[in-house]
Amino acid sequence: MALYCFALLVQILSLLSIYIAQSSSLIQCDRQSQFDLACISQAKGLIFHNNQIRFCDGDPQELILTQEILVNDVVVTFEDHETYLECKYSKKEKKIRMRIYYDMQGIQDLEYDSF
Image (cartoon, rainbow, N blue to C red; front, side, top):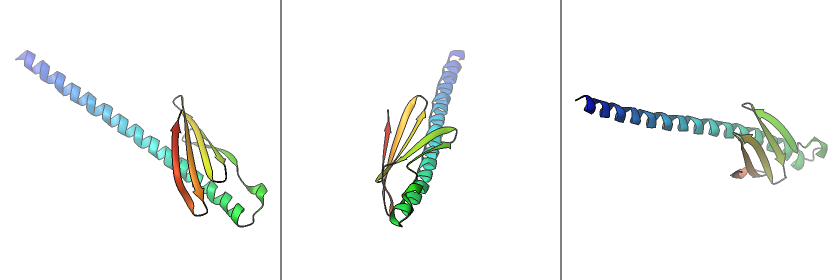
């Protein structure tokens, strides 16, 4: 009987550890998606600013071509290349790069690379 209870306890603990591992992975994914949405929100503001200058006869000196912003304690670098905005940051020894393609109407596409 004791052996049966021990085996049952091991199975319950195994199921709990699997549940906890899955939950922590989901929480980590949620944090990453919130971080990416914060980066995209910053990019939208930068795109709007630069598009106003480009298409409304603004002073080209006011264009923001490179900008570093601190998002959730991570330094994110934005570079405007006229048709896309490159967003680069390092997280957990990985370098992440998002290319946000845009035109006069807004964001059209997004590429996400990790290297």
